Image 1: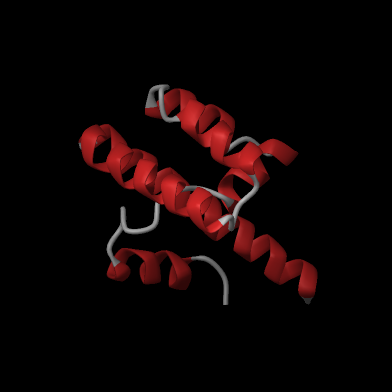
Image 2: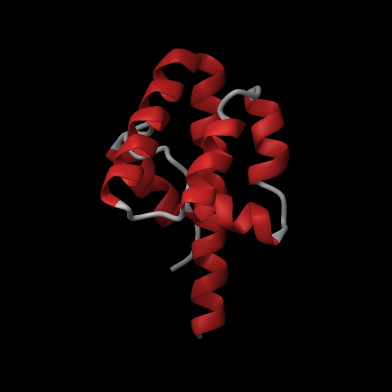
Length: 105
């Protein structure tokens, strides 16, 4: 059961990041600003590894398609990037809960 929930969590994270990158395609300035503020907060509060923060700062200089090819990859790095994605607030709560309901129990 734990493995199943881990898989569900990873699928939800992938969908969330993918939809945030879709939002970046539509409004890159807004999404990049949200991500930059969140990375600053993570750094200030020391709540995320510096290597992930720096990796995301570098990725945010790329196009959404380039970010997606890295962050959505089924690799250890992709999984780590999805777990540390700096996109809270990009999608509204209704959409976030819809993703939660659509994927898994």
